[in-house]
Length: 168
Image 1 (cartoon, rainbow, N blue to C red):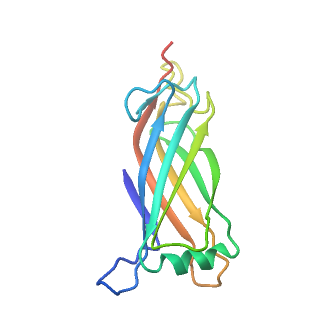
Image 2: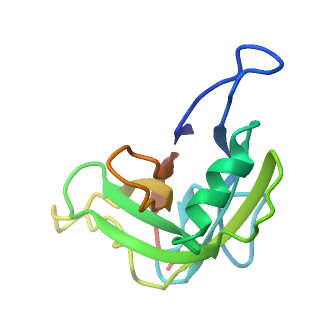
């Protein structure tokens, strides 16, 4: 899983300014679940994408307090991009309250996106239009209205490839 957050200002010492983000959980959950996460998805049933992330560093309280004046929610969105033929699509989006202030120097968030049944087509050997293999990507975005400099926050995480297969 690749995992990137912006801004990314790592600490260079005990009193240096810092703010970083990281996804701590990204998983696909089907019901009934086999193990902790699935890479083969039954396209005929809905499934959940569970996401958790945190923002850390001594700039976190200042940054989140400033953004929370005009922005009340993180927007968490999941996308599917086919590997091979097929069209990319948005799987779903949820708003997650920014909460606070006050904020600490380690703030955690989580979200669940439920993907409806029959959203991702499986491979059809007689139809070369869908591969049934997808790269899933999740973004967590916090908008900024603080002027020309980009104070927006965004995390991006890619899943391993998944295969959509209806068992019947």
